[in-house]
Length: 325
Image (cartoon, rainbow, N blue to C red):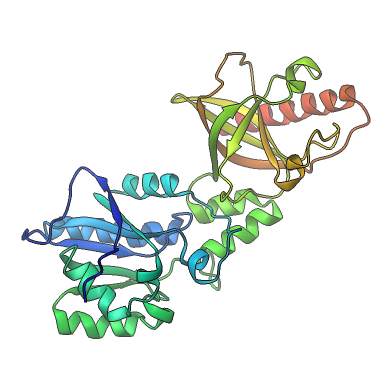
């Protein structure tokens, strides 16, 4: 069967062509968050590919299959596609292939996915999956079927063991989301293996930070599918144009001030105060790394009270950063 509407994009300096002898060693999964468990699988893929003189590759599906299968339009993910690709490449994977998940891919059988796409189109020499990986129509493909197909079609099959946060709990994207919902950013960061990040273009806000509170802030335009942790104030590092700055980040609805529009109630805003910084960086991209949650969002009676609280928050952050040095 030919999959005529198969659409995909390469993100690498190389391209695998099926008529070339160089095989691809392929990591499969959605890899939301690219957490420590994912990193273990991806590192294994990169290392084994290097030994075999193959091209380490990850095949991703975009959008998330649940959006197509279950019509879920409100999924919030730990990593957007650009964030995910960047993290995967930083681990050492040479090539990322993003397959557009459409009706045709939704209905493909597990065996056809392996034969027609991974073997015939991307010249797969080995596959790397997690212990609970499922694939193909109605998720009928699993690690048992992969093992059978690897023998039948002569490709290597690696099933990577889960990485545990402790003796009983395996690291997973859902566990990390639960921690973020609670505001436990420190434990979430431990399972991720890096500080949880929020990225977006710097946009104009209501200018209350500078004009009302004497604390200039930046507002970020965040992707609608990005998962935001529990509302509150966080100590953070803010990266703008490859420079890192210490600061505070407020995630929430700014209850001290009157809401201007209904759109502000639909999704929390992300606003950052960068310490000792007063430059024009509008329309530039900022990447925020959340380090510690220090308090809930709170409604103050006056802007003066809020300004006083921000001064206390900044002092707490400065003490925190001194301890990191």
